[in-house]
Structure formats: C-alpha cells, structure tokens
Image (cartoon, rainbow, N blue to C red):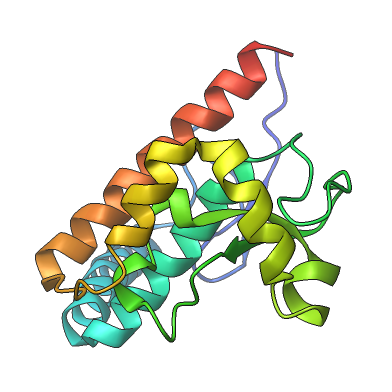
Length: 181
C-alpha cells in the first residue's frame, strides 16, 4: 500500500494529509479563504487596469514595443556601427521620441542599437542615417521622412490594441525562434 505524504497548506502553512492528490489546503476554512483571496486578486487587477492613466499605458506599450524590436533585430549588427549585438542592446529611434512622438511606434524608425551608440553617442545619428536606407530600403526611408510632421493621436483603446498586437508578435517570434533551434 502506498504511503500518502503530508503536504503544506497553501493558505495557513500547516501540515496536513490530503484525501486527494490535487488537494492544496487542509480544510474548508482554508479553502474558503484561498478562494476569497483569488477573487480579490482578480478584482485588484481590474481596479489597477481601470485607474491607469494614458501615460502609463503608453509606457507599457513602449516596453512591449522595444522588446519586439530587440527580438526582431536579434542577430543583426548595430544599425549605427555594425558591431554585433550581444546580450544587451537597445531599441534605438532614428528620429527621437521627444521631437517626433508620432514616430515613436513606427517599426521603420526603430532598430537594434548597441548601448554605446544609443546611450553614449546620443544615438550616433549620422551613421544611423547613412545605414537606415540600406536596411529598410529607400522607399521606406522616404515614407518615414514624410511622416515627420504628423501628430500621434492614439486613443486608449488603440494603445491597448497595440499592446496586444506586439505581445502577439513577440510570442510568434519566440515560438519561431524555438522551432528553428
């Protein structure tokens, strides 16, 4: 006969002998408390989402977008100096976010850039500008330059949709990378 090992209760931390292998709490009191805490966590998550400002949503989108750019450009050299991008590199904007907020999430404006060029050389703009048409093509470069005067007018729903879009692209990219290894 198999000996049943005792477990630690997820709610109170006490030791108990389970009746079933899937049992995670010692009794009904702890089961009720665990269920209530799960409901509270879900409510709290919704409350936090509802109280975020547009700026906070843009920051979240920027983080997700930059992660996608890093994944997309993994294995390519730095756009500014042709150094190989190793473990840490940035998603460098050719036209800065401060001057051209409308191009903040334009994939043809953002490329993998070594930390030295992006942070210490202020983007190494001259070399970036020379190499950018070679990477994206002259037509895409011209379209990018023509978009400079436009305004960025994203609604909250569009920002949330872009976050979902880039999270999906990240997931697809990671799946593709795993399958090719």
